[in-house]
Every structure is written in C-alpha cells, then in structure tokens.
Length: 210
Length: 243
Image (cartoon, rainbow over all chains, first blue to last red; front, side, top):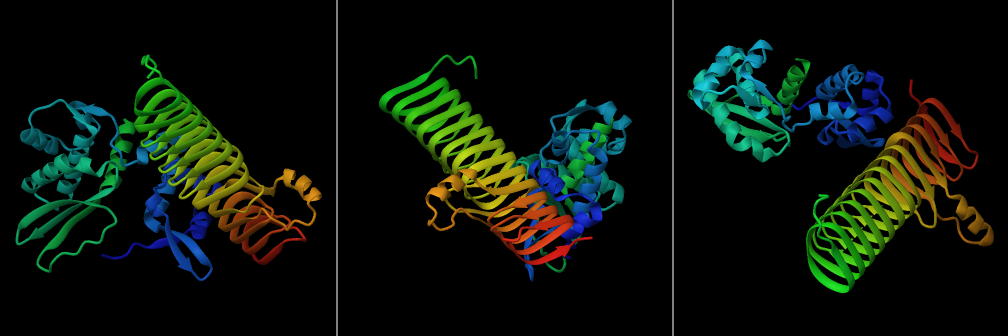
C-alpha cells in the first residue's frame, strides 16, 4: 500500500488561508477527526501533519458550507455515526441516490420494504457504487449486505474500511478498522478498498440536499 | 429525569449503592458503589463514587473521588475532586483542586486553583488563575491563564486568543516577600493561536498571527504572520516571519 502523502500544519494554513483559531475550533467541534492529526518529530521539534488529500478536501467543504450550516450540523454530517433518518423507496429513486436495479436487488434479498434506515441505505449506496464501477458482481454484492448487517454496528462510529478480496474467482468481503496495513498472499488480489466514512459523508450530503 | 421522586440523602457516614435519583445530598461521608444519575448532586464533606456520575448540577464543598466519568451541565467545585475517567460539563467552576486522569471537555472552564488533566482539555473558554497541568493539548477558543503560586505545565496550547499572565495577586505577595525566588512560570512545548500574549513562559515553539512576547519569557522559536512584539526582558532565540 502506498503511504498517504502528508501536509504539514504550516503548509496547510498557507494553502487554505485559514487561521490557527479556526483549525483548533474545527478540531474541537469534531469537524476534523483526531486521527488525522499525525505527530512527527522534525529537526525543528514536534510537527503536526495531515493526510493531504483528505484534509484539503475536508477544509474546502467546511469553507463552502459553514455559511449555511452551524458547526454542530456540520460535525453531525462528518461524523461516522449513522444519521437518524429514514427515506422512502420512491424518494431514493427520485433523488437518484441509488439505481433502481440495486434497490430491486436489495429487496429481493431482504424482502419488500418501503422505508430505509440510514445503515440500510449506506449498504445500498456502497453496493450501488461498486456495481457501477463494475468491480464486483451482483452475486458478490450479497456478501456486502451480510457483512454490513452483522458487523457494522460493532465499529460504533469508529471509521472502518470495506475490503474485497478475490482469489481464483472466489470473493471474500471484509470489514476492517481503518488505518491498518493489509497484506494479502500473492495469488489473491484486493479488488476494492473503500473508506466507509467517505461514503457516509457523501450519502449524508445527498440526503441533506434533497 | 425530573419525575423520579426518590432522593438520596446521607447525613453522617454511609455506604450505599448508586442509582437514579432526583436529588442527592451528602452531608458527611459517603461511599457510593455504582453509577449515579441524578438532577442535582451536592456533597458537603466527602464522597467516594466507584462508577460514573451523570447529573445536571454537581456541587462539591469538600472532597470527592470518582472512579468513572463525570458528566454534568454545571460542576461547581469548592475543595478537591479526583476523577479517574473523563469530565464533561458546559460550565465548570473551579475553586480548589481538580485532578482528572482522562480528558476534560467543557464550554466554560473558569476559576481559581489547581487543575491537573492527564490528557486533553477542550473548552470554548478556559480561564484559570493558579496552576494548571495538562498532559497533552489544551484546545480552547479563548485561553486565559493567570499564573499563580506554582509552575504550570501544558504540553501544547492551541486556540484563537491565548493570554498567559502572571497573576496580579502574586505581585502583592511578591512585594511582601521580596527575596522569594521568582516562581509561577508556564512551561510548554508548543503554543499556537491567532492572538498570543505571553508572560513568564518557557516554550519551544510559538506560532501565530499576532504575537506579543512579554517579560520573563524564554522562547526558542517564534513564527508570526502579521505582527511581533517583544519585551526587553524576554529571550527569543529565533524569530521568523511567515509570508
């Protein structure tokens, strides 16, 4: 796995034009997760670094939205905790959150239903994204539902990643705590590695826009 | 919680178990085994709680030892409090000594005395006169620290406005005890903020927009953006302007 590119705090402030006060306030309000603050020793002493892509995208988003939403609302949106919202089937299709095919597939598996909770919607949304990129087949998608249903709650709001391995045509779906190194044997391949909170965020954004 | 009519009152000495109450009043000495949920908790004397406390108002006149976490809207402390877990309150009023092994989160933390936090301390306003020790980071919109009596040690301070001064009360005391050695300093690794004013502070790095380094400071490196001022009785080994 390639190591993430880091950006120092100083550079970050210069590039984004925010102040120390703002950065610390956003950290305090949990708009920027604790685990992004990476301490490293440099020749000038301790320095704080951030994962470059993630932090730049996050700050851009906060800057865009902070005029419309309060900090607490923003924090709610970025938190990995599932939002307490349910959506109706028609609404999901209408807002184009997931494709009709994925929705149909979900209901074939789990039975007919009209409203979807956030966690259900999250599974659906992730599956839909995976299917659209063509990385996994519909049949393999079932395991996404299973693993989510059983184990997503165990993370209790901590961030996690969804991994999809395939060896000789057999696929395995895993849910792991994020930030861990994963190594697989040579014949197996990591087909998908996605950061669940990113999707939580996207989904919340789509839901709040509607 | 309001409809629980049960109260817990201890006069004298007692050992009891926790639970859900409306008001908890301890006059004397109480040992409570388990968690405590209540609207109001007042301790006049001594209380040992083996679990967590969740209450709207926590008043302590005397001493309290809490093994778990404390969560309250208002915590008023006159005396001493030891918390093994975390403490969270929107208003934390300090008159005495508070020792917390975990994190402290609050809206407003203010008062006099000693405050020791082993990990992080986060608040909107942190205004304390006395001695403060924080093991990791003090993160507050507004930090006001008036150094008094003993040395303060904070690993890292981050916020918008940061002011560290020696308390005026000490100056009067100092006048009386002229030969007493200079005490009450702050030691920090890093201080970062928009507006920073420091006195009697020894720090490795100070970074910010507008920085004033007052008397008695010893700073290894200052990085400023808009303005920088230095007292003649301060030592700054290196300063850089950030464009």
